[in-house]
Image (cartoon, rainbow, N blue to C red):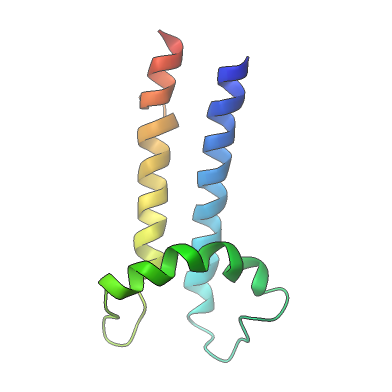
Amino acid sequence: MNSTITTLSISLLLGLMTILFIFRIVLTWYPQAELSKFPFSLVVLPTEPFLKPLRKIVAPIGGVDITPIILVGLCTLLREILVGQQGLITMALNH
């Protein structure tokens, strides 16, 4: 039971972060949006700590910030590797 809660928690957290990064991608289409104001701050506050260091490594391509796209892929990959049908945590808990 406890392992199911752990797996579900990890899955939900990574799923939520994926959705938040997708919202960040959409927000890049609206540069006039004031990211420090509600409701945009609900998306910016949890994602910016991940995006800021990655922006130092990955430069914008053609003026487009691709860091949220990278993090959507990373969160999706981690979710599949850890708690997917063949995931490490899933396999460990079932054996």
